[in-house]
Length: 153
Image (cartoon, rainbow, N blue to C red; front, side):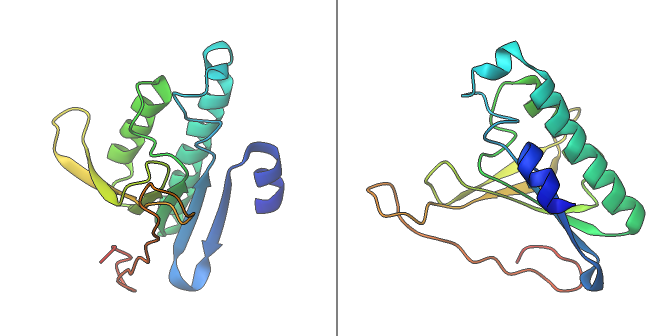
């Protein structure tokens, strides 16, 4: 099922039942990307991506699982409708989401995400540098998490 979803949309989910943990891999290259001008003419791709994230988080919450979200580009960086909707999902599922992991920027950084209504912190986007050799900060990052809470340490 994960393979078929990946082939069709670039998105997939993998559950680790023993750890009550769900990995949600999101196609941020095609589905939520302000640099993808094709999305201007076909917003359905963005809608489908956001719906995939919403339904994946909803199912994780119902199962009592924590969730990690992984993607190439940070999803709250853009000005698109999808970025706004994603921010609303972060608010809604902040007790389920234990980590958001991205790349793309070529910087070793993090971003605190905030509630759309009252600007209170509700999560962190961990953004790692690239592993390829170039003049743009070649590096990689290893994350550790608390086994019980799944919070990134």
